[in-house]
Figure: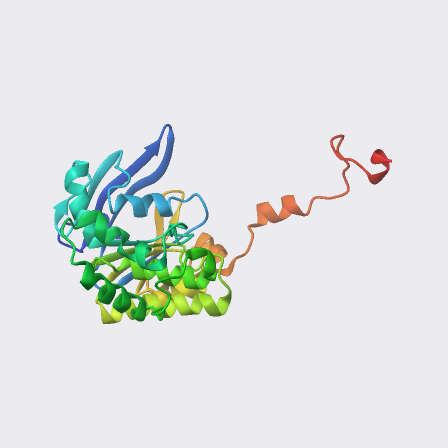
Length: 278
């Protein structure tokens, strides 16, 4: 399990006693952990457990109800937006549905974050930069294509190229293999591993895909009802004694839910038969 107390310099990203409420609902409940630089950390857990909300706190897209967030030893959760804009250039984002701009070419999608953050741009150098970023993900030659012309896997790869456009230290991935077939998912997994190894990037990956988590992650953290209930490498998670962890990683429905699903033999008044429509 994660330590109860962590210091700002324990990792490149650190959260201390993080609590997030939306109204009366507690989404994140007193989380303290440090994410090590140059490693890949996967965040797993059932839908609604707070995974994406937690990741948004790492870049101050969400602010804590209580607690603190640190990047590279600096507290960031209390910074104004004008200071966060520069800080966010250290991060790349790979969104669940790729989030490419349909009206922009692959080239313009990749240079979009550069144009947003850099005032003076050497336009001649952009061609080489885009060529290099696309080559990293095996997509050089697609510069003039538009997202509608690409497959789902190709769009994910272009999104990865855009995520590394500003040479970030950290990439945040939100369900990077969702909607992809097993082979294409594995291509994305290999690219995540490649970026981590070759570019020394720190990766935080929110995922439901246990095959992906086992393959890419140095560390897997499981959230349940806003709390960390498991934290360790793939072997530790596979053998974890907590029933909730085993239920999730094996993809098995709980006994209470299963019993409800198997209820039968009762016809409620709100049900209809084919004869009712004749």
